Length: 171
Image 1 (tube, rainbow, N blue to C red):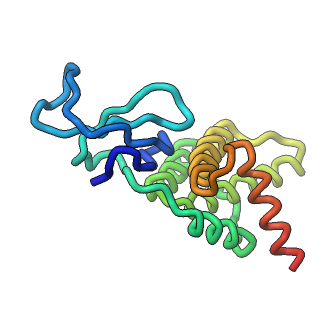
Image 2: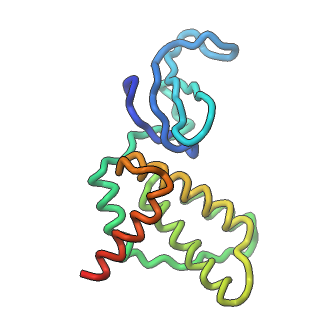
């Protein structure tokens, strides 16, 4: 069980702070259950979720060391563009990557879509809407968690990753 003040990753919402654990006085809430009151870092609003919720993933934010180790793995990841026969199959493939709630899976997904983006750009075409939507969502989730883990602003995550990967290649 998490404690008030803990930083967690809640489903596809991303990083949240556990503000309290209590029984909220609101319609629809089970009066016999305890709920986390979560405050998302990068969105407005508050989320109430049962402490024993099994439908939505909730896990601790990765550590600084784990974040740096993940970034150090990036040069060795060989991502290929994923192509599907239908938009529905493409959507399902991307949804599956999100279901693991793993930062490494998000990195691989982002790199796969980047590869696809480079291929389409070289053919004077645009990336499809499904690809663009999942790329933005994956970047938002990954960069949000890395920003918190590395204690840097969200907007500095992508340049931080680029610089660290460049430094590795130069050594």
